[in-house]
Image 1 (tube, helix red, strand yellow):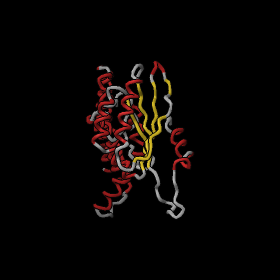
Image 2 (tube, one colour; image 1 turned 30 degrees about the vertical axis):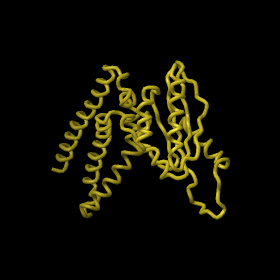
Image 3 (spheres, helix red, strand yellow; image 1 turned 90 degrees about the horizontal axis):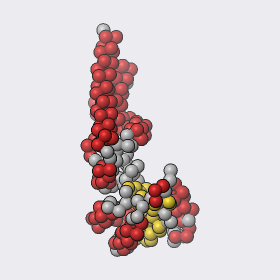
Image 4 (cartoon, one colour; image 1 turned 135 degrees about the vertical axis):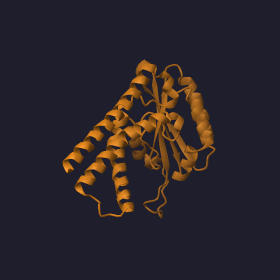
Length: 254
């Protein structure tokens, strides 16, 4: 993962910027940091620097701000630059206040005219989501359009629920449990499978189609229709397959 070297840099260099109290609890969180990646197209490097300076100036006004580090950009193909910055706050609460602030949201919206995409990794707040591979997941406008997110989640969720229901019913699992307890455990199992196994596969397979909302204009109509047709077709095939499977199971029972 391309962010890992930056993250390791933070952890290895922590002694340079952490002021530890000898009497403090060993489990205390002294700093809360976020690593941010901006992908800047050719010819917009100067505009990005100006935008970043404005972002940093606004960030310094927030309570708990410690410091910000910006790494040298990585040069990619076609003159594209990847800029990495690390912003530190004294507590997770103060970092979250900044991440959720209206000031930052307004600056991010303006910045969408400069950088192609944006993503971040918080070291202490856990603000990653299923769709954060292409953009920061705390802003809906930087993730895929809502209708695509809904279709993608249903595409991954539907077969899990159907197979889980079928298998548990055939094996008699949790038949003697109370409805509330059985539903709780079923939902827990379903969510774990969806989050750790299925959604990463769905996102990877449909990556060409799950573009951030502010970049959908760059997605060709052909690719848009092709992705939508794939999802709709898979859903239709699954419905037919599970209908047939239930008929077969019913005949075997009879």
